[in-house]
Image (cartoon, rainbow, N blue to C red; front, side):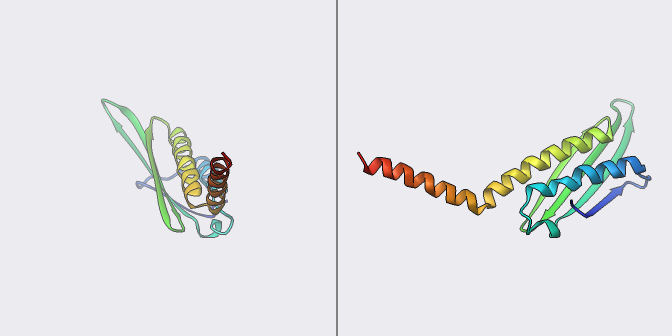
Length: 125
């Protein structure tokens, strides 16, 4: 669970329910990281609400996830703050999976074994 989550709002107070929801959703994102990296992860959550005559109520959620060696960002605007948090969480999950695949050593070992198998088939002809 990500312990260091900073929630910022544009001058308005955040309800306890929304704060707990954000901590629950964003806090679970460390599951996609290596255990050695989990302690140094930090999340900055920026919330904004605006209203206009044309579009009505618009809630924006932006999360910047600071992980060792990278900074991942996701942003979404919807009519409901809870929905915006859900969508941002899904976007960050995808980014973290790609980051983990790219930086994983086990992937490289697997990749080499595939190359060896292909080479073995080629040489056995």
